[in-house]
Image (cartoon, rainbow, N blue to C red):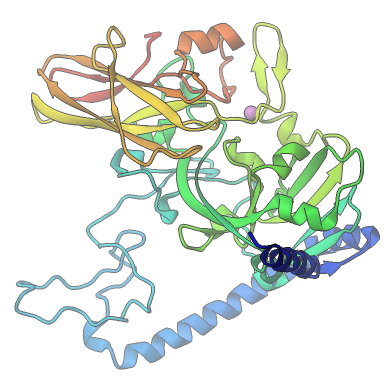
Length: 469
Ligand code: CO
């Protein structure tokens, strides 16, 4: 490269660096602490009033639109259609009538009224499970992405939300969503998994379907700003080692994150699958720590406080630690989700119509990188065969595997076993219990990634099966 070109590029790089440093509002450490304390109540006061105003506006514009559109208006809209769909009349012969006008949906599409897959919400209303049994490919639709909340879903007006970075930094800074969007961004397809997924399955088969056993894992394309970019703006004081991430939800969810993760692949995400992130995923902004247990990717992120030590918050002491029941000690800061897989078809509560060809398919993922291979057994683990993997196989993302199978109509147990690029293979239940002791009744076994078995009876009924009987 000519020296003049190189000089020009250096000048440009310097100019960009300089411009980035001017984004956001420099504040003092004292102001940062005030903002964090004040926003708690301001946000809650304003939240309901603003939400009501918006509803009124939408209701009004809906009426105006209805006047000229009577004929094409959805029949009993919202009353009969499944969630996410609008009920429209069904033509006797769709080739003899004009189809409905574009735009009657208000400009935001909906799925077919004949499709009804929804998240399954647990009785305590704290988790929504993705319907993996009818999933295709590798991406989870945003409306079916799993949910796990510790204090409900806050309704946050982005105009009133900010992210404050302070503590052991040279320059505490407050960023609005608009500020955040001005930085260079990245899009990455990553899975996210709750560390409690399948935790109740360690000692025996408890849940009937793959949605309820494995449904707290999903994959989206996430877009945001590398956290390292923001930490370069604030600077880090010598000794900075941990970051307290705090959410603006009613639980004020907090976790301690090692600074190395923050400076490597951590993102501050504001978009999911090509549009603004869903409220239940942390709108308007969340922390995203690729490959790590879901709860540490703090949603509705409002504050990052840099420190020289972890904070030992409730969610990393009383919860999200792994009890070794044989010693009474616990593992703490177990962040990475190890390799795991599950067959989604056929799976629990399905019924195969009869002997013949079936494509066994499922999902595999690892928080440590790419999936190297998935093996499938149709004889309860006596023999294993390589499944084919859907390209492209992405790191820290779900990979679809497929295995052609001719069922002979006799009882069978089907299983999948994932191995990631580090060489780590999914363990058995027995191996996990040997490592961490048997589970006490009522406790949750975090990081439960054992090989899942589905039994198929001669009549075609598929059931959740457990190797310990
Ligand atoms: Co953990």
